[in-house]
Amino acid sequence: MRYKLLLSMEVVTYLVGLKAPTRRGLRDLIGRIEDDPLGSSEAIEYDSVGRLMHIAIEGENALIY
Image (cartoon, rainbow, N blue to C red; front, side):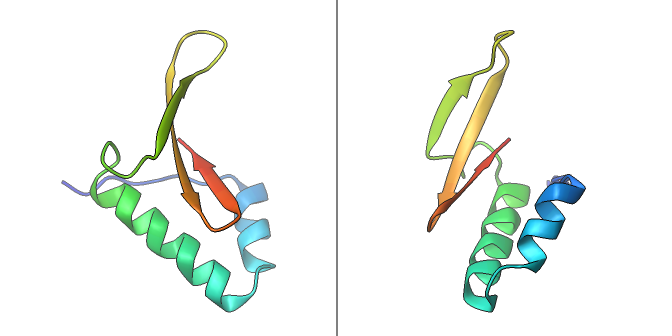
């Protein structure tokens, strides 16, 4: 099953401003998260109300979902 990863406009604006290789790396990471959200994270944390958050890192950027 392929999942949809929704991004805020702030993230979309940030992605547009990146250099092409960095943007491609993050786009590939987003694709891997869509394919396998649980297997794509490198770390997990819990937010202030106890919800599980996955963290995936690509270069100097991290996606938290």
